[in-house]
Length: 220
Image 1 (spheres, rainbow, N blue to C red):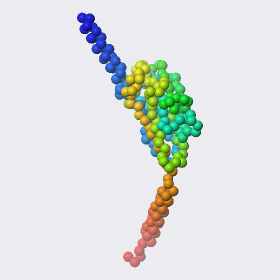
Image 2 (image 1 turned 60 degrees about the vertical axis):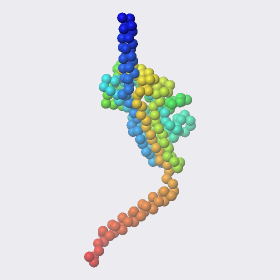
Image 3 (image 1 turned 90 degrees about the vertical axis):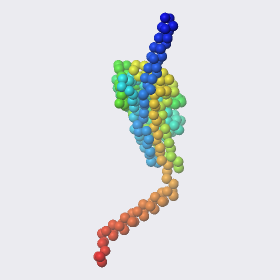
Image 4 (image 1 turned 180 degrees about the vertical axis):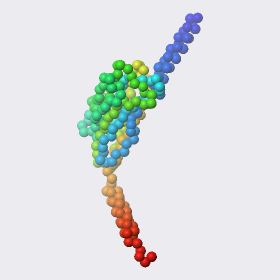
């Protein structure tokens, strides 16, 4: 009888742990747009971070940090600047925006929001926050490529779902997406010459065609 009770208790614990561990298995956190190509002049892109899960999964808060490849926002002039972090859900919660986090590996910038009065469903997708990223002009002969990625292993990174602060193991099961921005290289002078030559040739052919249409052959 005693051994049966132990086995029953063990089975119940395993089932409970299994449910708790797999609760975030269907969660995905993404950035949109996930692929952007800019010209050599650079520009500003607005990104939106969203979360999506199964029916019944509610989010109560998060402390998300992102890293930008090939960039240190604190090391002098940076080719990327982060600004205008806007919160799009859980608006009654306590929020913090960190466009630049000094001296933290894997934490270039982040957004934090906790809602103590309830949560919001992740089913069907839920926009969490948006931010503007401005990219400097590229004066090199090779493209500049920047990858934005969530860093769940960074200090302080957290996610609360169904009133449960997710463990490191549970966070590892969340599908965190990335976004890549490519700033094109400056065209080579030879490419500019060829492009101009092709454009000029096309314009000359078009003018000849227009003249031929305007002046039909009267001998016909």
